[in-house]
Image 1 (cartoon, helix red, strand yellow):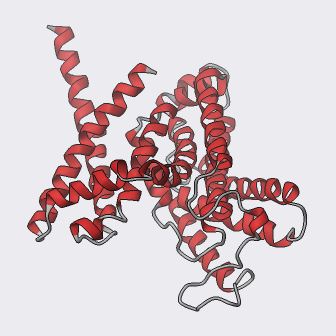
Image 2 (spheres, rainbow, N blue to C red):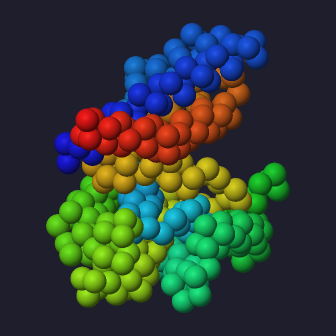
Length: 348
């Protein structure tokens, strides 16, 4: 665990470098870099309610990123978390609509079950294609994201359309207040408990089960796993299903928590940010929790960028892209340099 935490803090150094680069870019564009940093620090950490807002964005990101971790550890690059997030929310919305009028203790668990099932199924078909025919899961899961967006547009402008909507954005009928698990602020004991349970379950799965050990080994050396008598098919399919189920769970949390309804194109970068979080955390569950809280703070700070620095809130996407660039460089260049340096030290 100590090694994972050290890796996370090493990655945070590259995040600081990425932020410095963004400050330079925005300065050249005519904005104030000190104001940008002040907006990020105030919005993410110092202002009243900053922790609550970081949790509001960070908890769903952690749930999705934990699923990405298990898939990447097994060696399968499932980048379809966004589509699985959407399909999970859609399935939960249909469940809530069909069961409307029943007691909350029936409807809420049914919605969570529907959301997790939807996300798992949306991840399972690229997994089967990868395991059966060798189809590149990067391509199939990316296609799944675009298909999920189309499905979301269809259901919010068709079967679940809110007839009282303004017409500016397609959205579904709002959930009954009895079925909501939080207010629009997005933080409640229920959501915190879900995230904690997911974290405990995933940590135990990764670190204390044969599946966790074998999946990590499969990601590094698949041949070794077959020598141990394990079936790559079972490990691969399970990793896709778990990853999709957790993304669907996060979609359900957003639907039944802060959003309260589906809307076309809501949280369009959620899944991709979750992938970035998993990479920054070096595929560690504990590290993922820390990094998700950090990125939750960045998402909260996006609201302050226009006020303090005059930057559009979309500038946070540029910051995230710069972080992704430097983390990729860290993984592919710096780590390789360190490995080669250690080899030279040991051989001299």
